[in-house]
Image (cartoon, rainbow, N blue to C red):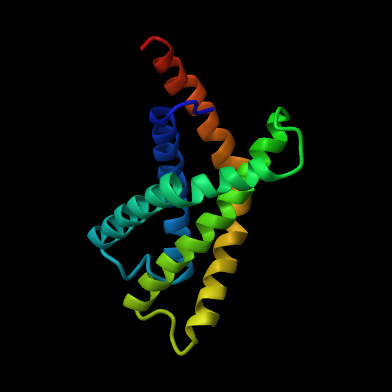
Length: 159
């Protein structure tokens, strides 16, 4: 896994690309935006979402998730427990913040209707969490770790 700032950035970029792509398509589908948005609108929203997610990952959620994981009472040498705790902490934090981003986008697209902000946010959070948890733990996490170890770590060994 990442052992320095450069590798953390590379890992974060790979992870954010995958998660933002899938979660953006999911949210557009859930809100009925796929047929109504132009390709340019979708590209802009996904690009902004990627930047927001990467900044959150690197500067807020990532460091906080690491502190929470290291504070938990389990053997830190247990890699599976560490990865599960870290991933779960990241999922909770990223869904919390990115659901706010989704709420803002929904507001601009007028898709929250007559709901209160609290109800709209809670709905977005729940829908995002339902997909993000299994996506991260079962698909994206293992896939990104494989890509990272196979290509990034291999490349950095010779640098």
